[in-house]
Length: 169
Image (tube, rainbow, N blue to C red; front, top):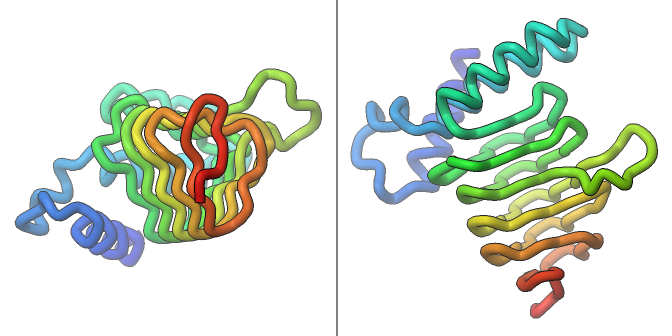
C-alpha cells in the first residue's frame, strides 16, 4: 500500500501543474478516492461485496467520485477535479489515463451478459462531461473531447468529439 500511495502522489504531482507541494496532494479528491478504491477493490475481489459497496458509498459522499468496487484501474490514473465522475462495475481502465470532472464510464441499460461498461486503453485523455457508455473499447492514445457521448468503439490514436461522438483525427 505504501508503494501505491507513493506512485499516486507522484502521478498527481506530475499531472496537475497547480500543485506546489507534496502535502497538497492529500487534499485532492482524486487522492482520497483512489486510496479508498484500492481498499474496497481488494475487499470486492475477496467477495466481501457488501462491505466493499458500503465503503465505496462513503467514499462517494466524501469525494464526489463514484468508483464501483468491481472496476479495474491501471497505473498512473488521474482524475482532475473529480466531482461527478462515475466509473461502472465492469469498467476497465488502462495505464496513464486522465479524466476530468463529470465523466461517466457507464452502461446503456441494454447490455446483455457480464461486461456492461467500457474498456479504456492506455494513455487516454477524457475531457469534462464526456459519457462513454456500453461494452465498448477506447483504443490507446485516444482523446475524448469535453461533453462527447461515445457509444461505439474508437480505434487507437483517434480524437472523438460531439453528440453522438465522431472521430475528427
